[in-house]
Image (cartoon, rainbow, N blue to C red; front, side, top):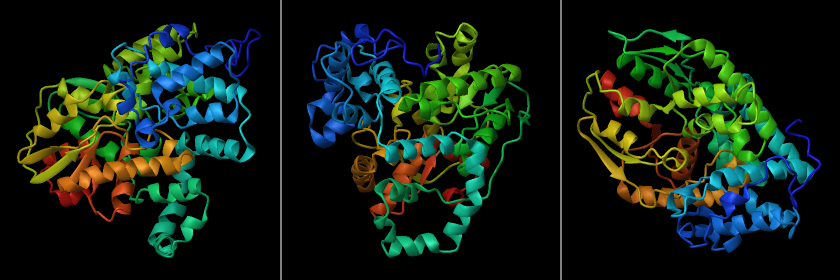
Length: 441
């Protein structure tokens, strides 16, 4: 049976295809430890916009006490899926699996308004297709370089657009020359590892300098790198938004590609992608042709900071005179449990002063496509994070996820603070190559 076809034995408001698990819901004792960790509860103080409130709504739907109406769906659309509640939860409630199952049910069973449906489809058909993103490079470069973007912003004309469209403009990265990664890169000196490199979608087309920096660092540390050009989207955006069938199709293609690469590890420099890749075994658990293969694939996946922290450093680090504020991506610290490793890498750099940002567990508002479909809440969270960063007076902000990078840069720019935001690996790359901070601009 197709994942898009509602089975014939519904569970309350849900169809019978993998509804949110009652066994997971029953672990929630409604203690409230999740409340201060939840971004939307921090913004609005509404019980039904907290993890335990949403679990209550799931259970009511499972028992047939409520239907999927616009109000019910709205509480789940407003969830960022940052899973900070899982870190805070003393009972071990796997909220991530609950919210993803619920969103898949919503996309199959709730008729969204036409405009909303078209907007979401446009996002998925663009941001999960690197070849389409590549086609956007020249129009966006012209838009930025000819001054049209600056004029529209200065005149405030973008504010006349729907908020979802104006949000896209505020998050646009500066289009730079591409730095493509070769399909095979030799290790410097004696080879220590043979690794695969995830290229990503937005990362590959608009933030290719981060991929290039990742490859240089891996090569300098003695890794042979395989970066298959035919790799597609990993499916993370689709998983987080309930587009189950599309997500599983992407996962199968990714497994097919990297099985041919014959690598010891698959290195990821986008935290949102990494958290999904590590869950392939669970995502494809019902697929007899891929279940075991997906588990093997997931076992090889490592965030770049995680991988390098396990590999004793070989390349010399040069000094960087910099005050660096580090931002924890939610899908790194909460979904993958990685916090110390990026800090360890930064602390390897001589003269670098590492600074901690208050409210580190709270999301910056990026959260996959959240800042494009819930722009007002995302902007509020971004401004909150920017207000915590600026008193530190850092020279630069580092993070481990492209979505966070764009969101934080937009928020800092909006506040009038020209503080650059970079990927953690870019600082390590600059240190190994003996470059200054100016090279990261």
